[in-house]
Image (cartoon, rainbow, N blue to C red; front, top):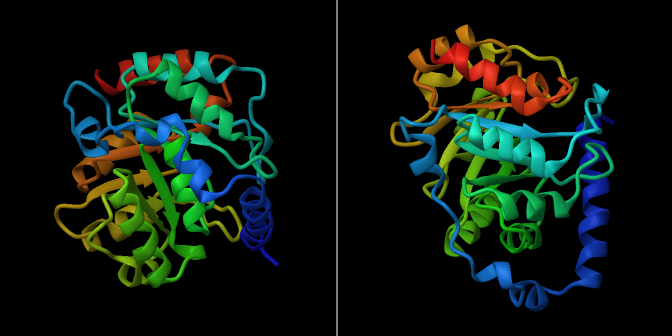
Length: 262
């Protein structure tokens, strides 16, 4: 069983337990459910921003503890101030040390789009994402059927959420395309063995349809790579570990952006 299989197995149990505690009806009664989500596209393509989706992540299955000494509020505010186009906040607790309240906390102090980064396997999590104050959900092609992707993306759009579809290869991309997707994220990390190669993004760039935002995820650690990805047509760049492994992730991003802007 791969790490991804273990994550999905655990996630199914977590979602089943959450449904027992809070029903769909009670989720939709939460105040944040009435909030109008921000436009991912508007912020990502804003020339005053960087295209960087800056991630808050305490740990990962492959790296263990990355940084559990910094606060959500401090890091996300610093990311936004440094020019982040969006924030990515992990909510998986068991494997990534995240928490649902991290999204609520980030929302309280920021006015840029927030991606709820988790392993979405049920419509319940889509509704839940909106009640946390997220603007974007992540759908991972490797763990979903084309029918599930279509179903979850349609639900997200119906309640105003943006959808980022994550793929790892051409087969996943071609079988998962849907009109309700706002962006395609190419994950340069293989979720089966956690090896990384940014070449994955370059290989898939020309296969992503026009009009769909292109995001490169993981394995981005220098500004030269971002410039090459921009030339290949990418609009966004999800960066987490490169910043989070520093004592002050916000300051690390600020220095990165200074170099990016020349």
